[in-house]
Length: 421
Image 1 (cartoon, helix red, strand yellow):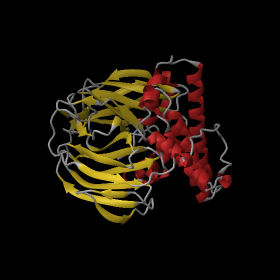
Image 2 (cartoon, one colour):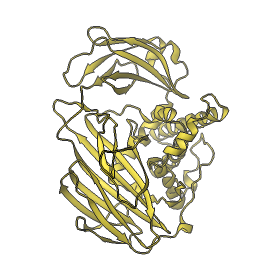
Image 3 (cartoon, rainbow, N blue to C red):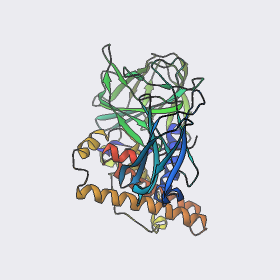
Image 4 (spheres, rainbow, N blue to C red):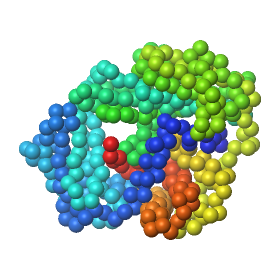
């Protein structure tokens, strides 16, 4: 589907705002030269985060990122959970990742300099009581005869001792209303970029689920769909199985009216200027019921997506006005949306070594290098703070626009970087 219906308001969502900032900061690191350990071998340990004990005889892989993701070497841990991997096949890589599959769940950690890498894995449980949604946000945007609904759920796994919830029968169950058309879902990876996940039909009518493993900590799941708005109103009646601590509803345009037995008006959202509605502390299965109505925004006034050329010198900040910034934010949000699954699936059908793919990878690496260069200029005081952030947003928008078009395997190489907790 076309990204024309997106609005810059969603880039301001508190639930994902810090996620975006983290992505902006860490993506710059991707262009740095390989760590010192790349000169010969890389060492580290695999630890069971549930028991606190080392994991012996565990297969560990060294993955090289940059122009795709490939395996450079692999080995088994010794009786103390220690491993040593050759980096001979990692020349030219932008970064290294350590990967290991433990009890059916994939774990990764980024290699940082010459420091031994510590990869933490967890015992898997097919049932885990106490899972809850710390916060949720529903965004409804009406444009022309269409309504776009995006729902963000921050699922908290505070198990003690920490364990990963993994169940092929579903780890996150939800329902969307009858008006929802072709819902899609994504999960934020370690690099805080969306990884599309398959939606399965549940046992009961209208029930849907994904089976993405929920590791200890917080996992953000995004559900997105569109609905008909030809009659000037749309019903939002989604529900999830987990209890929710706090939920917010934002609508665009801000003039839309909301009728709900659950949400109550809570003034204006400070980050978007839109009318906000809130609800809190309700049990799993509670329907997030609301009817949104009123005059929709004009489709003709929506900003169109533009990618532009790769830039290696940060020289456009002084030329970028508010409108350009919003346009770039628009593209960034499209990458944070979950309607990219079909495009990624289509791109995946092409041969990995195609000229087009190599060109995309080259452009992506050049953008990441530009971000790293911009960071250096800021550190040396050669670029003003305000201009620095504007430039970063533009560069990151271009990265996001490219990521949404490439195969999942390649996208994951840029998306699933380890973020220190």
